[in-house]
Image (cartoon, rainbow, N blue to C red; front, top):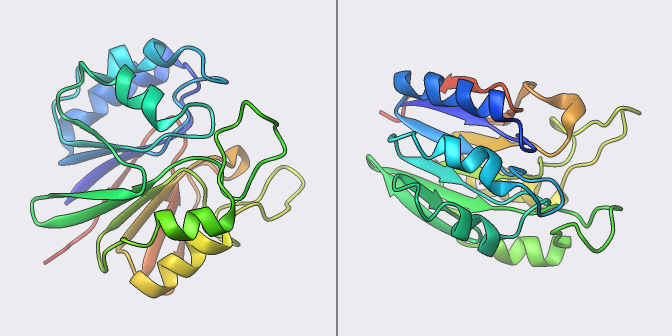
Length: 202
């Protein structure tokens, strides 16, 4: 199965138009959050992305809530917004959890969850599927400009326990497009340009 993965558009319309073009050549599109800036401008990119007719799995970032994202994608018929829940496409299970994990230093505007809340949201993640999260697993693709590790311990524990074939995240801009393997799981910090990944679920 071929995936187009992206994150952190932050209202970038040119990037959104490029993703629409790239989506023609994949099976599933994955958007790992932060379409808006501080809850403003969701429509800037989502109205463009709504032209994608491939199954599209989205989670909120820390710049928009799950309710805001669901409302903004009402016209995007092929999109599924996940947050503490899952879905299935072509026999492949997906699970999604959005928001900043752990709680960010950005203040009240940021849509954040602590590690205990995240553990609950991740609880239903299936084995051997695709995990879509805004925040990276701890010590993977999560180093900021000062090379400090900023990821989530609860997401890392989920990946080690459930062994998803693919983990798509964003949030930490300095590691955009970086990929690592955490035991048997490919972990990708996608970024706004879009990264195509092919996984054999046979």
